Length: 133
Image 1 (spheres, rainbow, N blue to C red):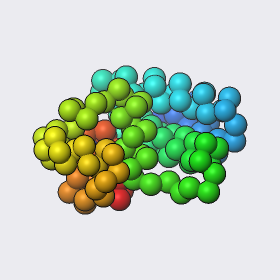
Image 2 (tube, rainbow, N blue to C red; image 1 turned 90 degrees about the horizontal axis):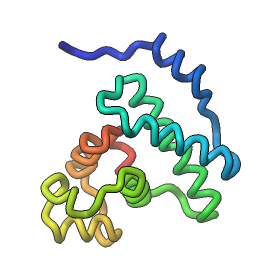
Image 3 (cartoon, one colour; image 1 turned 45 degrees about the vertical axis):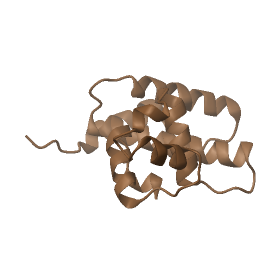
Image 4 (cartoon, rainbow, N blue to C red; image 1 turned 30 degrees about the vertical axis):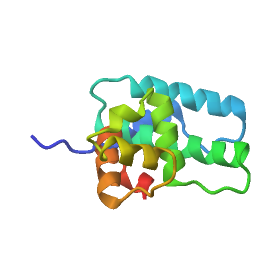
């Protein structure tokens, strides 16, 4: 059975949560709470996953601008953000993107994330792999 994206369900989610550009810490905390709620759903729907990814992008953009002015969003920071949000340790990524040494280099920013690793990370975190490229 192939899952299909339901635009009507997504519209309902958008109306419920009303995601928008995050401009201050209070809005960031609210967005983080929604991400936390979605993150703990065991079987997120395609529509919930889309909202989840959208919120992560909005949160990361705000945090990059607010906490690190002048620095652009990077795949490495996306990885660190998702690891922190899901309490993922480096060891959890061993076998997903490579050996213990490779994971350490990627997590510590000493090695760029390859396309194959981006795809694996996208599947692991249930997000668009382009976030890591």
